[in-house]
Length: 141
Length: 386
Image 1 (tube, rainbow over the protein chains, first blue to last red):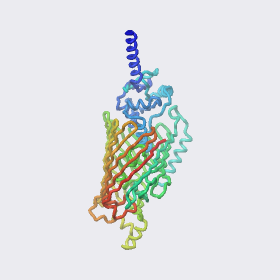
Image 2: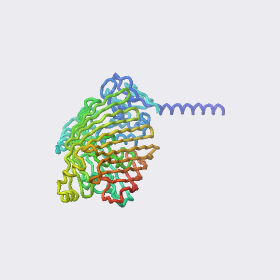
Image 3: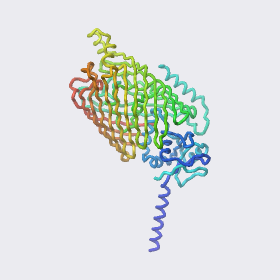
């Protein structure tokens, strides 16, 4: 019985660790061919919120949203939910000021776009790092 | 110049039709979107009808009215190359023509070779203060409508012209400046029987902005030179009574032909808290008469609910004895609630308590009892984007 309880406790702790890791981090990624190694949090906000889309190497940043991860990403980036993010973009889109990031419908679409464009920035769950990309910034949830 | 928007629209459509997709990212060349509001308002004021701005010829009387706040906008964004794109937007709302006839609100081509530089040419929004460009997009703000004490007077809807925006990072902050020049047409109503048509042939302005963390700060200046024509039964009456040219006489008394707008604005958005404050001073021709308008707003988001509080005020400073009864002295307390039903749909309700010491141009069918009176308004709104 004691052994069973110990096993249960170990299993519970293991599951907590796994689930925490699974939802812990979101990584902003770029194609391995890019010379950019990292960006700051404020640069990430400027790029994804359409304020100033310039990469540290002076090229134009091309942010890409990933639909399945979008709500988690913006909560981690600017602590806002999707209604607030859409409200923010409504102000900029309907005054003709800026456009939101291009939308990738799936993880595979995102990987495809970032693989084919050296200036494209996407985000992925840190546990699902695609090949041939590196992490510019990690956001904790 | 009046045909400019049509030419631009034709150019955009022709270019987009002829252009070939160049890369995987540019497949979505044309984006169609829209916004709208279904609004209902109820006033308890029997001595004057409430308007959203002085461009509305009729106001909301002592019943429910859907006219004041209801609107629909449609927009097409066209990406031509990586550096050039265009936007066309039409909107239908109750406005100065006395009906819901659609207006062309935006029709411009943008050249943005670099994130730090942007040039736009065509029909542009009226960007005089921090939210004037997006004041028709209900989904973009917590309130039922932007405060009437501030946005109800002396606003243009658009300008036909050009604009340059320069942006520079300052550490982790952003500094940016915008300069614009152009012209506009506008019609507003001074009473039920007196309207003013502005041919604003020279609109020049700019603003400096600083964005740091959750803060957006702006200081701006705009000047507008117009030819103003007054018409309606009251204008005829003035001409006959005093045997004068009513246009020249009313221009002399109102000073609407030369207008300068100074504006200071600040917005704060962090976590659940949203704060906004704007103050404008509109100086009329002779420099001795001006309007101070402003508001402060605080909103707090709790899951899908956003309660908010709004205080706005408008006051004319005039060394004369209010010669045409256009001087305003009014402030409003508003309390409201926004509920986000979905990520593109919000329901709102708002209560306004308006203290009117002098109604000026902001009320229709106003009688003397409105002076010093208080009005209570209840509004319901449904804002959506698609």
